[in-house]
Image 1 (cartoon, rainbow, N blue to C red):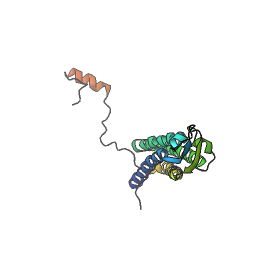
Image 2 (image 1 turned 120 degrees about the horizontal axis):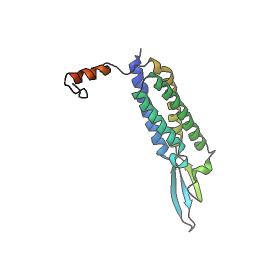
Image 3 (image 1 turned 90 degrees about the horizontal axis):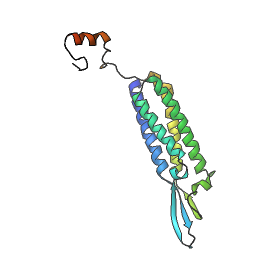
Amino acid sequence: MVTARREYTLVWLALAVVAVGLLLAWQATWAAGTEKLSSGGLVDVSASGAQITPLGSAAAIVIIAMAVLVLITGRILRVIAGVIISASAIAAALIGLRVVTGVQQAALWNTYDGVIDVSATLWGWVAVLLALIAAVLGVLVAVRAPRWPGFSTRYDRGARQPRDAWEALDRGLDPTLDE
């Protein structure tokens, strides 16, 4: 049986690895080809997922930010972060799928003119797969976060009463200094 703390740790580590992997996959070369120059020469060109459509990289950054939020917040904000992770991951998967299936073939080469001999790499599919995994992890965060441990209040100091400051002044002490 997996404890709540262990589950929290494993899910967070998986989410962090997948989110960083997703960002790196969007930065990798998704397509390569040859551009025919106006002078008649040929030059090799390539485009990353971020060059083709920067929305995927933005979604990956949102997922990374929400993963950090899951790490540092309490139960309620973790649920909200899980929903945002899932929504961002689904958006990244749909964007990536649209590009790799050729629906936006023209967008592959929006920065180059006269591109011929286009070939796609597997990085687009890797990004789609990682986005789908991130979506599942986001749902897991949203559903399981209420059962995960929160931060301990063991070392929290109790709030001082306003009267304590006046009494410290009466005794000749500076109440703004920690004792």
